[in-house]
Amino acid sequence: MPVREVITAGKVPVMVYTQDLEARARTQLEQMAQLPFIHQHIAAMADVHWGLGATIGSVIPTTGAIIPAAVGVDLGCGMRATRLDLAASDLPDNLAGLRRAIEEAVPHGRTDRGGPNDRGAWGEMPRAVQQQWAELAGDDAFRILRDRHVKLVHRRTNTGRHLGTLGTGNHFIEVCLDEKDRVWVVLHSGSRGIGNRIGTYFIDLAKKDMKAHFIDLPDLDLAYLAEGTGLFTDYVGAVKWAQSFALHNRHLMMAATLGAMQRQLGREVLGIEESIDCHHNFIARENHFGKDVWVTRKGAVRAREGDRCIIPGSMGTATYIARGKGDRTSFSSCAHGAGRAMGRREARRKFTVVDLAAQTAGIECRKDADVLDEIPGAYKNIETVMNNQRDLIEIEHVLRQVVNVKG
Image (cartoon, rainbow, N blue to C red; front, side, top):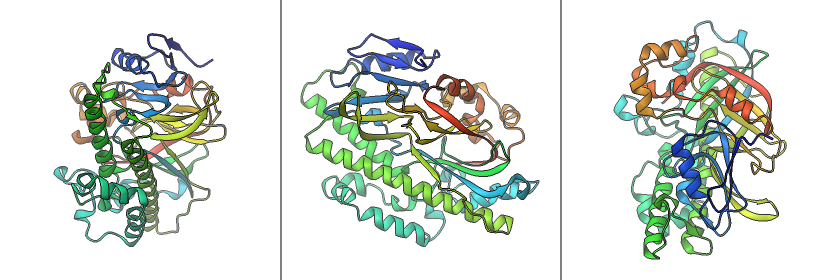
């Protein structure tokens, strides 16, 4: 049995898939387990760690309510992976040009760091982006947001311009090789600015609703929206729309990346099997332990039997392609990656750019102070995480990165 610890301090237990649970994360999980609408138990994945609002790496089944802060603000964040019709021998010895080509093709980074954060610095939106945005903007859920929550939608004007862009932080694009030296592209991003605004907006509304109804909680970040209310309906629609935005975003970035590789290599570059897509910050309606419930996965991947999952480590370490086993206790879930071992500020205090260069040796990537908080040493050991969830998934491929693009 992969469960390493059972926490019994709340109304429901917390099943923990690691022996490395920090005190702050434990407190968050214990407080969440006090809520009366948690179904059966909470599952804490092998990469679990403290997070703003709620514990990252948690799977939270609920009946009659959803906690917006548990879903978070990086709505629909997730992974896309494609195996290409290329082998390692098809790549140049010097990969710097390939990295630059990808960086030029996919907007990334922050404007204040000299990199375009959206397409504002890139001229007119490409036709494919315009078409995808027209589809998203015409969706009923977006029209409801526009009509009922005007400040949310119109607070800024770059929603469409973020489509097909990478962002910052732990978002990345990797060129990897598998155990047979076949080339893959793996990328990680979500719903960008609009997802953040949706999450923040409804978290604030939930907190105001708790205060208006004099509902006392162990932590105000556990403020919830009750099913059957207008706010609940609008929130669910908004989150599902953001998840769709995130899916389109990753699709467009993958196409742009393959186009950049094609131009750089001077040959056609094709995916030779269907791309793998998986969210790891999302909600879904599912049946578990005999009941239809809302499942919030905050930093966790759905791993039903046969589901293909993408589980990255950090820049410089392995990424795993796996298949889910449909483990009942985990609510058919698995970890979404290595998980942070320390915060960004601590990483910047502890490590130097010399450490970054050493820990990413042999990989074509940025090795400057602006990505120091993403150094591999700031993350948990991905091999330990994978070992702790061996009953949840079956590993298909282990990918080693050769190019890493960060915002």
